[in-house]
Structure formats: C-alpha cells, structure tokens
Image (cartoon, rainbow, N blue to C red; front, side, top):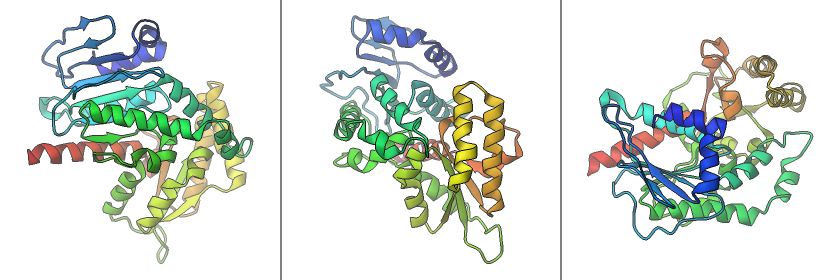
Length: 327
C-alpha cells in the first residue's frame, strides 16, 4: 500500500478502526517497490506481507517477539509520536528520500501506541502561559510514560532494529531515560539538527555577532530545553520568543488551528517568525509538526526555517547507508 493512501486512511479512521476492533496488536509489512505488487495474507492476530518493512500497532498491549522479524544490518526502529499521521509523515520522508533511482527504501519497523499518542497530545496542547507544562506533567505518570517508551524501544530491539529513532518532539523530553541501556544507536533529533547547522558553515547575519538560532515550539518542548542545550553545546546562541510574543502569536495560532482557522494561524505564525528575524537569527527551528506544515512551500519566510524531523530522517538514512556499506 502506498504511504499516501495509508496516511489518508489513517486520517479518516478507517484503518485505525480496523486496528482497534479486530487486531490487537497488529503486525504488517509491505513493499514500497514501485515495480511489483504486494500480496496480503491475513491471520487472526497478525498480518504479514513479503517485505523488509513492518508496522507494529499497539493499544497498551505488546506482542511477544521470540526472534528478530528482520535480519538486516540497517533496519530502523521507529517509536511513534504524537499522532499516527505525524509518524507516517516522517515515514513518508524516510521512504521517499531513501528510494532514489528505483531502489527499494530502507528496512524499518514502526511501533505506534494510540494510548500514548493521546497522552503526548494532551501535553503538547498545554500551551504557556495558560497551563504550565509542569502542571500538565504532574497529571501524567512520569514513570509510566518512560516505562511505555522503554518497552517499545525493547520491542523494536527484539524485532531486529539496529537503530532507534523517535520522530516526536514531546517524547524527546524523556530521551535520556528511554535510551538508557539501549543496545543499538538511538538518534536524538536535536543532535541531528545541530550537526546539520554546524556543517552548513553559517555566517552571522550581523557582522561581529554570534551565530543565532531561533526556536518556535509549544511550551512543553521549550521547557524540556533539549533543543537549547544541544544547540548551545555546538556553539550556537539560542533565541526564543519573549513571553508577550508567545502570548499574542504562537498561543492564538495553535488555538486557531484547533478551530480549523488555517489562514489565521498562518498569519500569526508569520508575525512570530518576523519577530525572530528582526533579532538577527540565522535560522529558525520550527519544532512543531503543526507549524512546520502551516506555511505554503513558496512562502519566503519558510526559507528561513528548518524542520528538525527532516534532519532526523536524513541522519537516519545516512546511518543506514553507512551500515549497509560496511557489510
């Protein structure tokens, strides 16, 4: 099944309905090779196709994996994020960017948990200053979230993943605890974007000033501060929006998105971006899936922005290619 079609069905609930009511958990794999058609075989509790790509859909329960589902040196394990749609968006990039010249994409395994997705979403929607992330976090069991993420990581390791990634800003708040004891490389999204910015050899916007990187994100991501920490470790000066600008642009922009007022949200985001540009930033990191997809591709302001999940996808592909070459 093409990724675009899969995303459409995930969005309208047709596939999720099938997952939730018929198959728990569900395993499936499918080829993205454009030159052959994939055949499907169904079983009571699993669906397996003939390829090197597998999606694991869970709802609080986990399948026992006695042996690796995939046995390839460059298999990627993906822990799902705030929503299945955002996870599939990352997956689409991974497939597209690694499938050039008619070659098949990388082998991967995806684990998506709708229950955990809802918990992440509730955190991401708690926007400063109306609801402090610390208060939102206290309403969730920190230990339980870390345990769930670690179990997913372990499931992917047992399933044959040789590298783990989390295409989710919120889940990186617990990266240190989730990655502890991991037997394979575990890429951090902020490391990936910081490395790309460092390799870009940027020049300061103003003579004599430092390289300045702006960040626009929900407050839960900013409070976790992993983007700020990683960027500063690479020698960048981090510039954030002040409280008043956050209150009058980013917060109402997200509120507008929740009301399906895309144009209103887009205009507010443009104001926030211009505030950072006036402060002489080189690049602006849009650390939010909603805001990363808000501006049209031909918008001049978008040229000043980067999506850290793009950097994570590129770093994942680079890692996989390096492993494949070493075989």
